[in-house]
Length: 583
Ligand code: OTU
Image (cartoon, rainbow, N blue to C red):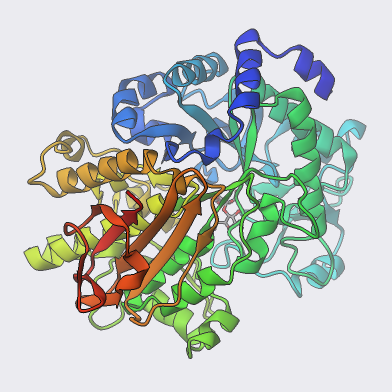
């Protein structure tokens, strides 16, 4: 199948394959900035995306992730993560031909298209699921069903719930399953998302076909959705099992043959120790995904802003296994999902904090329930049994911008904007592909529109998935507006980043021990581009670090002008950030 796909590869994509042999590190290049958007909410349709290409160019975008766009089931579809047909585009967005021509238009602008591959599950309405249910031998073994609760109970004893409030457990009763007698079908997520059984070779072959179809249309990056869940082992949490990595490695190896230009991005929002395996860091390096979300960095940025203390972030990030030098993190401040507090108890204890209490604090803080909180998020999937919850809310709302606007408080508004830019200064300066989430370039507020839509009302993640606000968009070049201030700062980050070789993803990142708890610092060194230091002060008071850290470096970009050194200290104003590099 891989050889046939390679033979069928269109000429333009073969040329891309050849180019990628030369610039195989394109996704590590500091010129690469990513942008993430829902096609409909950003531009209406795939054709509509063409009208936004200048906007993307302004932001330095060379990588565009369009959220799930294959044909979903009717009705609720989990934002497109319940696919009913992998060979067709959602007709509301366009056609496969539109997708292909958009990919071509993007490529001409030096932009790579990233699309989701929802591979842990299909919609219950997918033909594979219908065939399996009907007993069609071609689909035997595609899904898992048990006749009674014995095995589901045994599995669920160790599997945490993903969506405890409306989809507790990992199995759903399906009347027609099991030859018509009914059965408990594996459904990790919503009940209409049926988990594929990846131990079945035909599942692998079928999904490989989907990979080749998308690659053949010009998709350059596949976002491997829910990657941790692909392998199931009794007695475990059924995440990050060796079989999940085996599946990704096998898909990767065959894709290299069929479509060498294509890279994978792992969507594994897991504990810090489990993350780097998705980049292939195992007992030895095993090519797996070129990219993986840096969930730990994202969580630590928010944790630091809430506590006004960067010690936990510094400790947790310092001890992480480095990404293999041929891979890159996808760094981000916000995405379409909730934020789960992947704070390890060991890391919390190392700075004298209790893990569970700190996670509870973060939920209270970002839900706006903690006294003095600036955040206006909301709890997502609160689990009454465990007390666990995650957080929804737009980046601006979590930074304090929504609250400041509601209270007409200019000083609070300034602090909120500073937090938003500080967070982006970290993810744009960390190394890897910074993913800008649509709307954050304009500090878009929480959206309440979803509450009126019965297909979305029960899932408050829609509060941070707003449609593009055209009025806010129109203000983006006006520096006297919040939109203009944020947009201008982000274009600056992208432009300066592009010229800093030390931000090439292959360069290792180190997190120095600093004596001021308010400061997170990180350093990078690349043979071609010398030393880089990033510094952020997450607190509302002035902070400082030993000036030796920045000796010989120039401030290349910052919130408050060149970093001032005096009395052996480098000084950072409240909620400030700075990038410094060797001249
Ligand atoms: C992903 O998220 C998607 O990003 C979600 O939007 C989907 O709802 C879900 O898969 C199902 O397709 O648990 O709360 O470690 O964190 O796969 C979101 C990965 C999720 C999981 C992730 C999942």
